[in-house]
Length: 173
Image 1 (tube, rainbow, N blue to C red):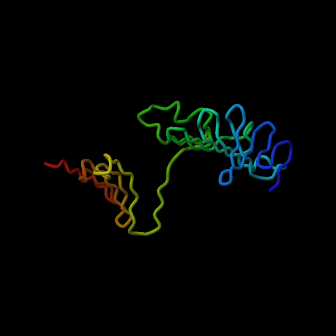
Image 2 (cartoon, rainbow, N blue to C red; image 1 turned 180 degrees about the vertical axis):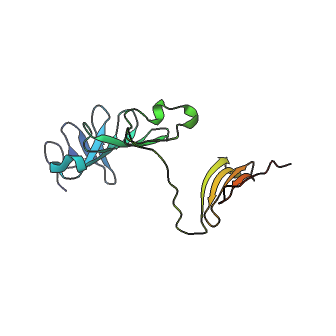
Image 3 (cartoon, helix red, strand yellow; image 1 turned 60 degrees about the vertical axis):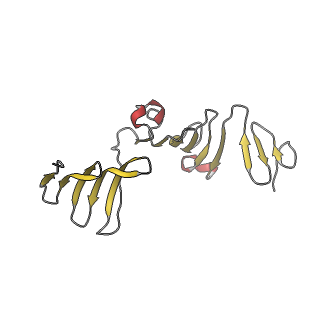
């Protein structure tokens, strides 16, 4: 155990408080912000800073807390924002109908999500669930074995685009 500065055997006093209660290391200051910086001090751009804001958010920065680029923010209610442009676009300023996960690439860059499948017979899926009883009632699926894109509604395939670009629509009638 290394303790520097003023404080007791388990507490470091300074601008913030560092306490160990036997199982948990606790960082805090009077504003409620607490951060840990990882990396070489001489190359601040390569550092990562992780911590909590007094507003209940958890954040990850590249660089320093004061001058770095925020890469990840988790809100106290579980919403998540990630990317390189979180100063403008986070879950807190998006439509509540689509703010559970926000991806905000740096300005001037394209954004996207990639679903990677390693097997030629695998499928990539985006599911829409209704509780736990209907976990795939709606689905967008890509079938790698035949290179087809399908759309499912009410648990039935409703539209298929095959590898030739042919479209099949199933109206359920």
